[in-house]
Image 1 (tube, rainbow over the protein chains, first blue to last red):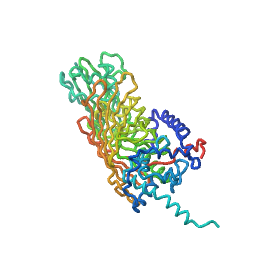
Image 2 (image 1 turned 90 degrees about the vertical axis):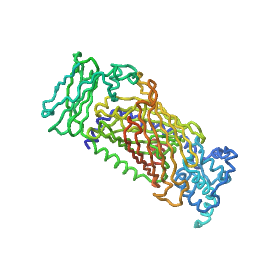
Image 3 (image 1 turned 120 degrees about the vertical axis):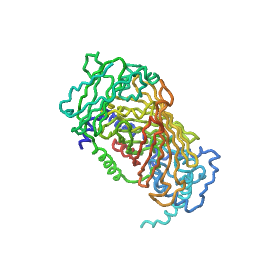
Image 4 (image 1 turned 45 degrees about the horizontal axis):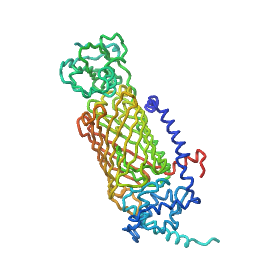
Length: 163
Length: 429
C-alpha cells in the first residue's frame, strides 16, 4: 500500500484530470447522447429508414454470396447478437437506441443495400460504420437479417394462445 | 581547466565509500552527446537557444567528459546520490544553477557522470537523498481492481479491436460504450535501469463520429521508484460520414505529463533512448504541457486494414518547437469468415498485424538523425466475453532506440455505459 500512497502523493495533475472526466462525463451523457432520445422504440421516425434509399445503385444490386445458406444464417445470428443486438434488440425488433429491423423498409431492401448500410453506418444518427468486420461476416449478418422476419413470424405463431 | 569534487554531505552514507576519478579530461575530444531530457532546458537556455545544439558540432560546446564512480561497500542502495555541480565563479550554492546533474544507481555503487563545459572550473557535491520506495503494490493492485470490476459487468457485445497499440485506424468507439484498458510497456534501457510503464485508458464513444479518451500514466523504473507521470485527454473526430477508400479521422490530444513518462505511446521528434538515463527524480523535474495532432488515415480492403498516422506535437511553451512523428500499421483477422459457435480459440477472434513508429525531428532540425524507430508485430485476441488481450513486441531499429519494447494490454468494453450514467443525472429512460 505504501507504493499506492506514494503514487497518489506524487500525482501532480490528478485534480485537473478528475475535473476533465467530470466535465466530459456530464456533457457527453447529457447532451452528447441526445440523438438517442429521439430514437425510442415507439418514436421511430420514418426518416430513420431514409438512409436505405441513399445506397447507390451499384451497391444495391450486389449479390449476397451466402444467400440461402442455412449455415450463414446461424453464423449471422451469432454475429448479430454480438454486434447489433445491443441497439436493435435480440430479436431485431428495435430498442430506444436503434430502430426495428423487422419493418417493411428493411425487409424489402435488397441484400446489397443492407450490406451498404452495415459498411457505411448512419453516422449522423448514431450507427457506427461496421467495415471493421470482414466482408464475409457482414454478408453473414445480412443473410440473417433477410431471414429474421420469417423466423420471428414463425416464433409468433408457435406461441400458445393466451388463456 | 580542472575538476574538483567536494563531498559536502557524506558523513553517514558515504562513510565507507571510495571515490575514484576514472576519467577526468579529454580536451578537444569529440564527445558523445547524450543529453538527457531533463537537461535540455538548462542547456538550451544557458548555452544555445532554440535547440540549435543539435546542429552544432560537439567540439564547439563540449571539451571534456568526466566520470566519477563511488563504490558503496556497506550501504545498501537505499540512497540516491545526486551530483550537484556549479561553476566556481558562481558564488551561489543553489544547485538549481548547476549545468548538469545525473545519477545512476545500481547494486554495486553509484556512477556519476559529468558533462563539462570548456573553460570552466567546477565544484561538485554529492548529496545523498533517500530513495523513494518502489510501489510494486500498485502494479499488482491496479490490474486486480480492473479484473474485479470487469467481471461484474454483464457481457453483451463482442469487442472487435485491432492489434495496434500505437497506430490508430479510423474506427471509433460505439456510441454510449465505455472501453476500459490497462496497458503495460516493459522497456530495456542501455546505460540505465529497465522500466515498466503502464497506463489506464478510459475510452468513451460520445457519438458515432466522436470518441473521447482519458489516459492516466505511470511507470516503475527498476532500482529507482514508481511515479505517476501525468494524464492525457484525447479526442478523435470522424471527418467523413461514409466509408471511402481512405478514411480520415482528426485526433487532438492535450497532455500534462512529466519527463519521466515512459509509456512511449508515441515516439516524437528527437526522442531517443538516452533521454531516460536519468533517475525518476531528475526526469520528473521536466513538465510538459503538450498538444498533439494526428491525422488518422485508414483503409480497409479484403479484410486488411492499413493505417497511416502523421503526428505533430507542440509543447505549449513558446520556446519549444513543433515535433514530428509517424506511425503506420497493417493488420488482418486470421480468418475472415465467422464460425457458428461462440468460441474462445476460433481463429476469427485473432487479429494479427505489424506497426512501425518513430520520430521525424522537429521544426529546428527535421529529419531522421537523432531519432528512434520501432517495428512491432502485434496480436489481438477478441474474446466473446468482451475482453480483448493485446500483445506487441517492439524492436528498436537503430542505436537510438530501446532494444525492446514489450507491450501487453487488456481491455473490456461496457456497452450501455452512457445510458446508465445519463440516468444517474436524471435522464429519462
